[in-house]
Image (cartoon, chains in turn red, blue):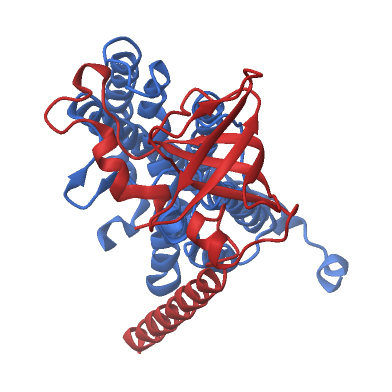
Length: 155
Length: 251
C-alpha cells in the first residue's frame, strides 16, 4: 500500500513538472519577439519602427565604416546584421572601450526620416571569445574570424 | 539514499565530510581567484577586467545549480518524504542566494567598463534577477513553515515551480537578442582560451566544494535546531503533565 501512495505522488510530481515546463516554454515562446533586447538591422528593415520612436538597434560595426565628423565627437558608422542588411548610425558622445570595428554594438535611439539611426547612447557587446592579447591574430585565435558566426547572439 | 534517512548516520558522515569539502574548496577557490588576479594575461578586448571571470562564472553556475538542488530535494520530499530532503533544500537556499547575488554584483561591475552600463533589462540579466527573488521567496516560505509549523509541502512545490527559471536563464541569450554574450562553453566546445578556461574549471570545482561544505554546515545546524526544539517541547510537556488540573483540561 505504501508503494502505491509513493508511486501516486511520483506520477503527480512528474505530471506537475511536465505542465510547469510546458507552461514555461509557451510563455517563453510568446515572449520571443517582445523579450528581445534590441532589433537586428534586418528586423528593423522588415518592420521599421515609427520615426522618432525610441528603440534599440543591435549588430556588428562594419569594418572600415567608422568615420569621425569634423566636430570630433560625432561618429558615423554602419551596423550590419546576419543578412545583407545594414543601418547607418550617427552618435555624438563618449564611446565605450569595447566599441571597435567588427565587434558587437547596441545603439539606443530612434530611426530618422532619412533612414539613418540617431543614437543617444551606445553599449558595446562582448562576444563569447576570451583570448589573451599575446595570442591575438595567431593560428586562428583572432576573435574577428569568430564574430561572423555569432553576430549579435543570433545563430 | 534511504540509509541517510537516519539523521544519526547522516550526521556521522557530515561530521568528517563537511570540513573536508569546506577547507579544500576554500583553498581551491581562493587559489584560483589569486591566480586570476595576478597570473592570467589581460584579454585582447576587455583587458584587465577579464579577471572577474573567475568569480562571476562559478557564482552564476552555483546560483543556478543551487536552485536545481532545491528542486531535486523538493521532489524527493514530495515523492519519497525523505526526512533529510526538506532540510537539504532549506540548507541550499542561503548559499544559493548568496552566490546568485555575487553573480549579479560582479556582473554589474564587469558590465560598466565593458558594455558601458551597470544594468540593462536584457533577457539574461532579468532572468538572473528573478532567480534572486525566487531564492528570497523560497527562504521566506520555508522559514515560515519551519517557524509556524506549517506544511513543508508549500515550499517544496514553490521549489519545483521555480525550477522553470533555470533553463530560461540558460537559454535566454540564445532565444532572445541580448546584451549578454551567448554561452562560451557548450557541450564539448569552449571559445575561452586555455589560459582562462583551465583555471576557470578549477575555480568552479573549488567553489562547488565550498558550496557543498556550506550546505552540510547548514544541514547540521538545522538538524541541531530541530533536535533542540523537539527536546524543549518534550520537556515542556513533561513539566506540565502533573500540574494539569481538571479545569485546565476542560479548557
